[in-house]
Length: 368
Image (cartoon, rainbow, N blue to C red):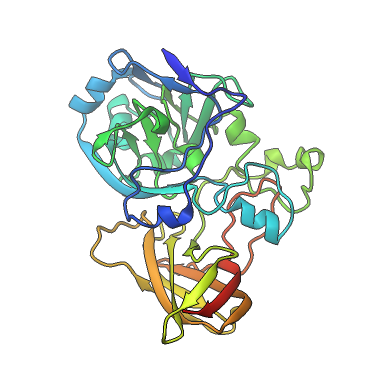
């Protein structure tokens, strides 16, 4: 088996956000997030073990997962927990972590067996479903902070058919690429991407969360009292692991510092994306402000595309702008669950879950 990159220098990148919103379905140029090398696995010999609190321990080949289980397709956004970290860092306070911009997200069609169906075949043996967890593990490579990668979700979510959790074998109608988890990965819609474990080796039903570093010592919204690594130590064990991603929106065009040329009518086209909170989708409203939030006007959400409660929306708005420098545009989204973006979220040391207003600032607006 071959590897690309390394634990010391893993592949982490995102596309320009203006390119990201050029397509409803993210194909080429999707963001990459890794904590270690990218393995090139032989699908013909790879097996996924289902273990823990189950009646029948299973070892399933990729062929068996395709042949023995109904394949389910889900359209959903997959988002890094640190998406928009740069904005938290620059608008609120310094944080730790990769300086992600606004494009650590992809909107794709994923296909594979439901996790529920696989667990049904194994026979979950947990008396109180609310006390259970399902842990995903990949032992293919060492990571920056652990010898393996893992994450977990609640058992209740794992077996809920409406949660659409799948073991993905395909992305956008094609076999997964190594960058995105070949030959198999978990996909947990509405949840931080850290739990959608790639290069999946093992699934355990258990009464506790994954013990992996990235479940226990990362991807948590620490309280503001955790101002540095030393202070954070007292909070890791009492802070819940991040699961649901929050309601969010981003202005992709124009970008910070751009020069905006107005139309003869004094208007400009604004573009962006918006994401629902957890399973509260879809996004039902996006609003724009050009007066620092004093007033808001509705944006147009793209129509004529397939929808799901898990996917993003792309939106546009034509707004009147005053000529001048240091102009600012804001966006905010509302989903079907009634969640609306606030101006600023709580600062946290790891810079995760940022969902303050979408913003394009320091604009120079001139006549066209």
